[in-house]
View: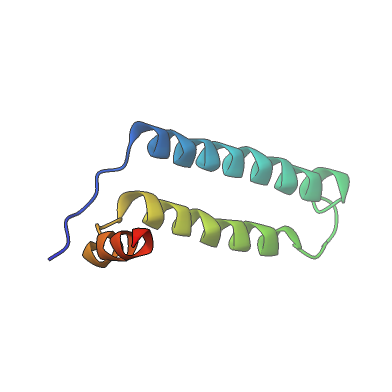
Length: 84
């Protein structure tokens, strides 16, 4: 079974930066939708859900790449063959 790789501190910090930017940007996006576009007074199409959903999926992918990474024994063989 492949060995589970421990994420480095830099990988963890980059993921946390991604989370913080996601939260701040989405808070701003939804505040704009609610207050500037007038969703608090009348119905306005919630267009921000598409941005939040797509970005959320990329955030899940970033989490998976950071915390569920395994070594690939075939990669070392591939790199060795590239040198020859």
